[in-house]
Amino acid sequence: MYEAPEIGAYRYFSQRGTPMSSLRSFSRRQMLRVAGVLGLGSLLPAARETALAFPGQAVPRAGASQRAGTSIYQALGVRPIINGRGTLTIIGGSMELPEVRAAKDVANQQYVQLDELMDAAGKRLAELTGAEWGMVSAGCSAAMSHATAACVAGGNPELHVRIPDLTGFAKDEVIMPTHSRNVYDAAIRAVGVRVIEVGTPEDLRLALGPRTAMIYVFANNRNETGPMSLEAIAAMARPHNVPVMVDAAAEVLTVPNVHLQRGATLVCYSGGKIIRGPQSAGLLLGRKDLVQAAWVHSAPHRGYARGMKVGREEIVGMLVAVESWVKRDHQAEWAGWVERCEHIAARVSRLPGVTAIVQREVGESRSNRSPRVTIRWDSSALGITGPEVSDLLYEGEPRIALTGGSGGRDSQDLPADTGISMTSSMLAPGDEKIAADRIHAVLSAKHTPKPAPAPQPPVADLTGQWRVEIDFAAGQGAEVLHLQQQGNTLQGSHRGAFAARDITGTIDGATVSLASQVTERQGFSLNYRFNGRVEGDVMSGTLDMGEYLGAKWTARRHVYGRQS
Image (cartoon, rainbow, N blue to C red; front, side, top):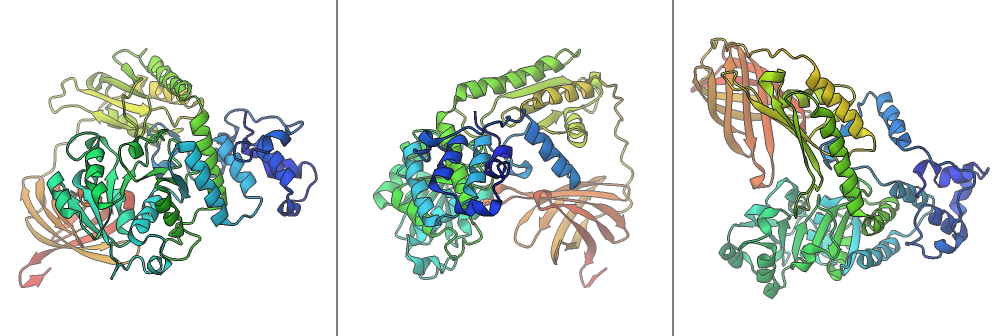
């Protein structure tokens, strides 16, 4: 068993009267002894011979560190979350393994030369994964940027220091299949490359040329088979010596690596998702020369990527996470996750009219891989919908995040199927009991559905052009709405600073609600929700920008020749 971080190097030595100032003079023998205790023996082979247990130390009970974390967050006025959604960065990704936390604690107590450490890490990652070489980065996004820079500039520092200005570079284009465009390809565009989007094999053949630095493929079902599969893309790239990089951020780490076997040159992973390494770490695996060049383009080396710093603690912690990944019993781990889903299902399915299905197998899926429990009921019978339950659980105490709620009541108040679902891979031990009790309590309570009130007659006809001023966190933006109104319904177009999109909404009396969206097919995603009120020829209110938080807006009707 690995010791928890609470009994790491600091506590070990402080309890023996050793001042922390003396830790900087750790002997090799002392470091090896601590490393052996904390599960680093495979990284430091000699530690196996010298490892000693901490005499008199009691291993904290399960959940002790979670309770300590809860009090820390509550002291800041921040509410912790029970994670039934998965490895989403916005709610913390995953929890580091105890051995990872302990390894980081030890790694922090000595200084090393980072180039030497990364070279050793690269060799060890190659041994563990079967790739030619490996690198630890400051997250998957950083790994993608460094890999792109390596393909554009090689290991040439004179080119490196000029990124993202690629003027005069021999290679400055990255090809992206249409099925791979997504919000995360910004990490590639940040290097300054020109993106060439292709949709067919013929498009790809025409796009490949002397300026092609790399092909980027986002790992998903659309590149598993067919004429634009990874194998097909790699086969077309190979005669041109063009590297193919796969973004497998949220996937399980396959050994041997499935993407490298299928023809990829490089593959990137998030370290802080299912692998359960440091949240701020990532992995780049693949061809040795390009991975080593990617390190040249990484901090601590100066240049565009200085802000993507990875520390010695993350490097060692990520290595330990990969060590653990290749050794631990994944079937037993999966069975434990299934048991958590089954506990929730058994608890809530005792309620009349409620059914629960546990998805125990997920086939060949590698991304966000987890068992799932889906709970369904008739909203007209229980008086509450899936989205409403999801909101209650998220806003209640304890706070529980689900993968979502769906369904609702239809307009005739006929029986309407509705429900919620949640995954179990990111639940801490005992979380399934808390979640089951909370869901049971919400569904068993008496709910009286409130019918939506009939919309009020509009106070104005908003048809026409509106000039919108948005007050962002810093600075202002000027945008344009073109609206058509029919009764209480609004539709039209929204022209932002760079992207135009459709907009739809309603007017209820003087209350206005409008929504527009830019999909990630273009490499970015924007979701705007305007809420406000109409007063004459002026509308104003608040703007919800989703992950980009909020702002205030004011719109004035434009009349040709003047503006109100």
